[in-house]
Structure formats: structure tokens, C-alpha cells
Image (cartoon, rainbow, N blue to C red; front, side, top):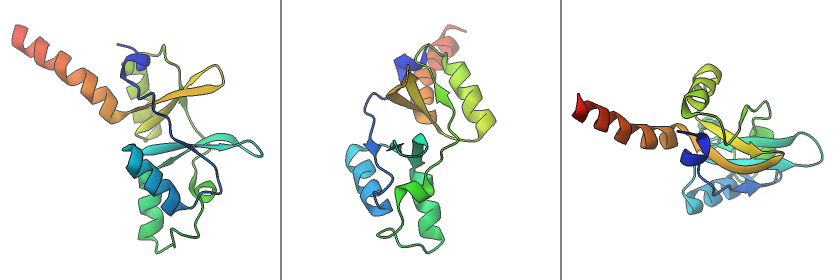
Amino acid sequence: MLVRDAMSTMVLTIGPAHTLRQAARLMSARRVGAAVVLDTDTYGLGILTERDVLISLGLGQDPDTETAGTHTTTDVVFAAPTWTLEDAADAMSHGGFRHLIVLDGDEPVGIVSVRDIIRCWAPIRRQAAALA
């Protein structure tokens, strides 16, 4: 199975000036755990995850003044739609993260998460167990 079969095509894109509260509201409304942060002036594409927001809150930072740009991961591993789910899982495991931005050329076309991979693998594992 390929990344394109598992990824979410609902890509929430925000700017680095969004506050963490704004980002959290948008992620909550869209029911996603990560947002692509697009900063054309500096680093290009990065990712802000729910974990980034939680870490900031846990440090006592103000979500109304902290910006997405300050908490964005810019050293991002990107996946291609043609990667296998095994490739994506290996990249996540090696990098210690739960989301990959999926690029088709230079354009973000999706995000694949650990949850997406499990959702695809669980039925296959159940079928294999039933046949054994």
C-alpha cells in the first residue's frame, strides 16, 4: 500500500504569524493533528503539530502571543505519494515523529500520520490472521 492511499488530503496550511491559539482552533475545527506552516520569506514549508502546542502550554507560554513560526519544525522529512507505507513508517520511526508532509513536486498534497498507517494496516493484519 502506498502513502497516497493512506494520507489525508485535507492539508491545513497556516502562516508563521498565526498564534498558537489560532493554529489550535483551526486544527481542532478540521480534526487534524498537524498544520503545514508556509513561510515564503524564510524557510518555506514546516510543520506545527498538536505536540508543539502542548509543549508550549506546558512551559507556561501564552498561546495568544506565541506564534506558529516560533514552534514550527523546519527540518522536515517529506514523503512522496509513491512511497510505501513501510517507507513512511521507517522515516517516522527513524526521525521520532508522527506526521509526514506529502509532496508532489514542490506542492503539499497531503499529510500521512501514524494513525493513517495503522488505519490501513489493521484490516490487512486482521485478514491475514483470519486466513492463518
